[in-house]
Length: 452
Image (cartoon, rainbow, N blue to C red):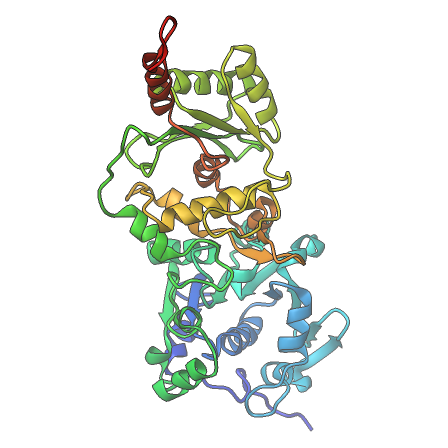
């Protein structure tokens, strides 16, 4: 006896899910969407049931990608919904399947469509497939390079892509959603707990009383990209404060140049001048694709222009060649190896750092907290300052997130921020003060009468 099954199976969209369900998918108004819904708003459930509908509208391969494959198995393949049902049995009941592979987390339907779960961290393992629909779940935590690989496939075959997540600061999920809001070919949808009505203020208060931080509540339930994450090294409030107010410098404030030299094709070389608290009024010089000699020439010009009291250059990669060339030309510069052992504590906090880069970023953070000034309208610098995460090692020393790990999260190298951080490599005394002290000493000593 044949059993009739309706797709979606035993599921109806809630009020906040209707817009996405009705307007997204094959033959619909939108084939790209960025969905920012609060925790427990049913993001995956909605995506799965839309996918089930799509599988009957167009025969093809469909992917549901978590940041990591292990998460996919735990959350969906072995997961149970709020009604006690196996999730995969709810959205693709066994009666309509031809084959189920637990090892591959794959379901093939009798009419030919296939659905598979995987991790976006291993997207290249899916080479050879031709998906026509892809869901990126927890997009804020996923590897953004997966989209660069999959995008041309969907463009060629007219497939769709759905990005669903809660915010995790201003990372690639933020830029995806900003782009979606300004593109009439994308559906951009954001819903807080107050928009959906699923949770009450009393329940949120319970979370608060249970120990959830305000920043976590802002991120998870109010869908704020501005909320701090628990691992964020520099806080938004400190950056905002450093963008306001007026700058007053003194003759005793040293002039320092920080120079970050590009290591890879997309990285930028940056010369950042800072005088004391002032890192906002002098132009930041940014260069692309300069070779060693060209970059050394640019730094030499900056030294002649600013007559700095200290010049600190990232000597990793081709930076070492820039340092060597400037020394050949007679300039006093100091090469800084980001990965070398920290030789100072962080600012006034006396905290330990695992390496030199962590140390100088820590000193820059202290400076931002205590009156340092940065440009108001340099969004790239602001983004870079807020991007790195941090952790502690076994010795309780601070370790700033590596550039390579940032790139895995879709965050480009923070070249401008690194250049500013380099100005905190070592304490520097203004030459004007040193010269004045030497002059005073000369005036107090007479070769005939001796010291006065």
